Image (cartoon, rainbow, N blue to C red):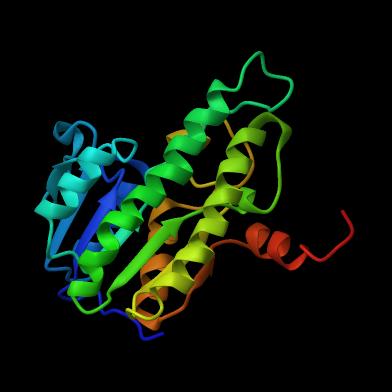
Length: 229
């Protein structure tokens, strides 16, 4: 699949107000993107200079559809928005955390992809980036429900890639271990910077690569998938 030059691109980053999303918006501007939209539930929290705030809740299909109708010039969609409730599965008193994570990390990403696929097609194909995780392939007991949602999002990414290949949309899955953001604030293990993850992801978009393994731990886990359970 051909790559998409960031210079002159029109990009939408979900969850673009902080953390990795904010790093994406900065990197896009630095590489010469023509327009960078940052989606957030509260547009007032988007403070990056040069970025256009967009009111967007990816768990609200009506709001997602409205955004797709409003932003007809998008050539690059970065599905970054996600949540982690740091919960187990059968040991929890109920499944509310797992449902919330699936609603955002899987169904929200699906709704965004469905809504913007025709927009990307109308603008020549473009590219779609899904921010996934090393936990797409492994489970930490204290974050098992998050792992399930990211595993589902990985399969979703693979399915979207096949469906959108004919319209020449590049679909990139970005996997990383711990990123130095608020979500991993309590983690003591080594972390990769949001700027480095964003840079690797945008490199992949420009080079036409469909997968990013952002750090050594993620690469080791992916390589070990065929090992005994």
